[in-house]
Image 1 (cartoon, rainbow, N blue to C red):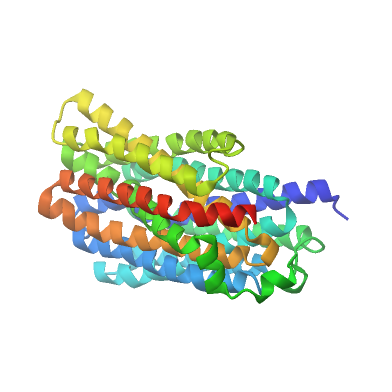
Image 2 (tube, rainbow, N blue to C red; image 1 turned 180 degrees about the horizontal axis):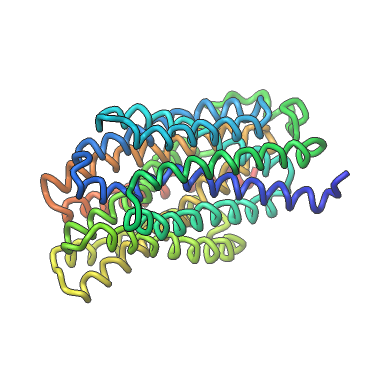
Length: 412
């Protein structure tokens, strides 16, 4: 029998590897989109629809995944998600029409949704809240490392082969990881995974209707903050290569490569926010998120001013500002998506809350993917940055509105 200490470490490791693979197969389209656009493989509006389809179905799938994640074996849900995502990555480069990419990437979005809520449940059921937060940090960093490697790997594939090879190899990678994950988790969770009936709950928590739980805890207001965060985080990540290419007249390979800076900034910010999360200010996730939204407003204002200048100095400053803003949003994501659902573990609703929270993230992401395409076409990239400022202000406002209820919920 595996000792409990090593079993818990193994659980965190396998969840990290699975989430690493899921991000690699989720971000492939965003990583090569600028090259597909430059080659005329698809139009910008269609590219926006492909990305929006992934986010819409990912968000909707979170609700289903969150519900199932508290009731079905989490490891099988995650394995299914990885296998379907692998198939979508292999199929997308083979379609003869750009519009057929939309339904394929929508299915990939739903498959990707089968990962996060089950991870939340696995970690929440097997770890204390303090260790749960740390484990979430490790899993989230795995996703960012995956993004870094993908944005280094994609230009190499494009240079020596083609954008299609990025999808093919990502699909194969998912199949291998999925098989290793399932075999490992069948051993690790044999005795340790809490079943739906054995989740730690109280009678009082079970009798409280789900909507009342949302309302009384302030989560309904937090959902709006999460939508704003999703718009910012995925909007910047998805469109920065294209923004850099079009605003500063750079080639596609260079534009993809500069995106490596975003996850590096994000990883650093996650370790910082994890440290300060232990203090009084950021221990309240809503207050911490409000501060991060306010900082992002300050960062986006000079970005809007400098976006029309093509000098090297302006390019570097704009990348720095975009990286810092994206880092703030990933820190906000850590607080609202990783930490908040763990607060509901005692009522056996961590996966359900995690599903709702992640669904809201991708409502914002879906709006950003197509909305930023329209704004950049109509008003230039300055118009897109104005929308970033607006959504950050929205995040500040609803963080303030949610603060009192969420604080009362934490102290209950």
